[in-house]
Length: 363
Image (cartoon, rainbow, N blue to C red; front, side):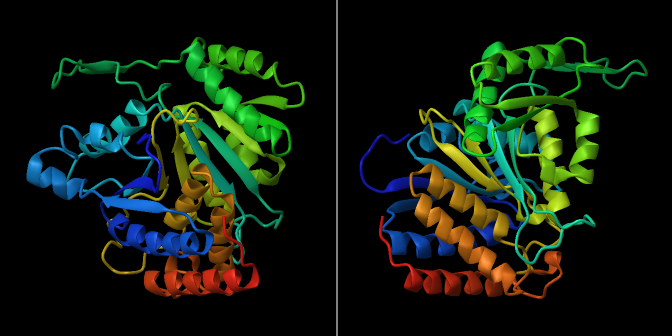
């Protein structure tokens, strides 16, 4: 991190597709709440992504990670372009950032929002926090291809779980649950994956023994996926490996009504390095440039960034403002509404002003 006093330095990477639309939209909303609450931020826009790749043969400059290290947070829009392999876009930008800065927690809320109906018949409120291990597990770089082009061609990729990696994400989940219901559910597949997943179970259980007030359940991931569809309101904090957490968080968001509103935070909890905040939805090239993208995931990710930077009231103000827009029926097309990106942002800005008038507080 920058280690300097004064405004928090935020590196902005709008990236690809609708990221180029929702990032500036979210920044307008963040600037509005930070003005109310006296939050000082300094934005630095970086033109990295697929266009940069086409011009330079790489997703970011060779010294890009060193540049990011001088910031307090990273605000990312989206990464991905149909004309460029994901192995170039993701492994050239997103994953190196996560790993260089030890962002080992990927925190993904999934909860009911006003006006957005769940896909479920029951209307019980859903309020989940998925804690995904974000730096090792199934997404390791260890492996390769053998005999390319031959009938016997083979591909191998090694899953890597470490005691340190499992224990620290389990502690994060337990600490989070301690501020909520005190319940943690661990996703596993230890009946079929006989080495790494029993090790995961063992370390999670041992770690949570240090949290006597926290209740731990370990559930096989296939049964857990079914339960998240049948009764998601019965869960609170979920902790999962990199791959399982990736899948379950998308499922949970979809159950609440739309994956398009889902935010995420890639956290370095010790704050030795900058954390990164991004929506889950991706670059959505099919609607890019049309002005109809849903900016909620980016705005909500911005609220998570404000909270991480120590401004919980500004974060809550921002969330309440976009929830008020939804409650009044202002929604983009993916949610069944007719609002454009700009119309939704204008509604949020109006609500920010209205809420500020009702509760004038300065941090």
